[in-house]
Length: 276
Image (cartoon, rainbow, N blue to C red; front, side, top):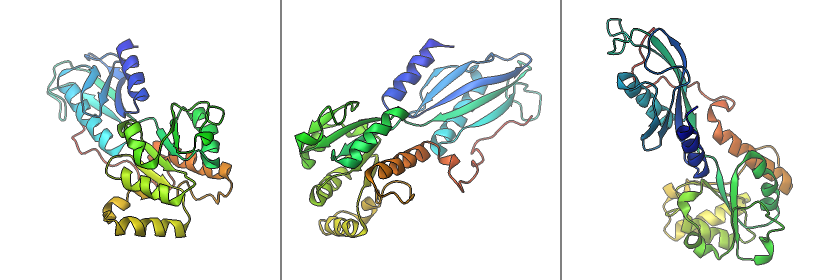
């Protein structure tokens, strides 16, 4: 196992960045990349490691780019025989199977409002190694005793949240606040600054009033489509603990979209796959 790859994989996980891992899982005959050879492909398609170089590696990079777009990996077979139909331009003479695995960004949540749902969520998130921070303008609601495993606990007003936090470091923003007006204020300030997933706990009436106020203030309807409300899977949750479970279940499903009930099978790769 290459320590460089292990360190880089851990770094990417810590900074909540997705990546693709390509690994040689089977070889036959003479091939440049031996069993277990691996390569990491970052979101910008830069790489660490190698699965054999040359045309083989370029093909694997194409598959990795497709996996990054579709968030789905696959297993690919390559013949390193230029004289064989569908073979790569290589004279090695062997063949190789390479597993291309998409590794999603590890969730990092910013929770606005340190109330009962946030408190319940904070008990579950660390068990999944999902990171979180909490923000509230009431200092008594975000103390260490309530959120002992939070990365950060910040007393801040809704209009100053993104002055205090770097939006690029979070994957999800959950508005679990106690004040509809402050929730609306934070949504308005987040749509242009925060690129990730935005969820709001709200009744149907609160949601309609919030969206109407945002539209009247000039927020584009297309931007409002980014706001998810209600949050969590529809499991009939009522108590704060049940709502927390439904939110965590939704997060898990986002990590494994191809496992969702009714999910379509993986699309055919948009690049040529050498035949056997």
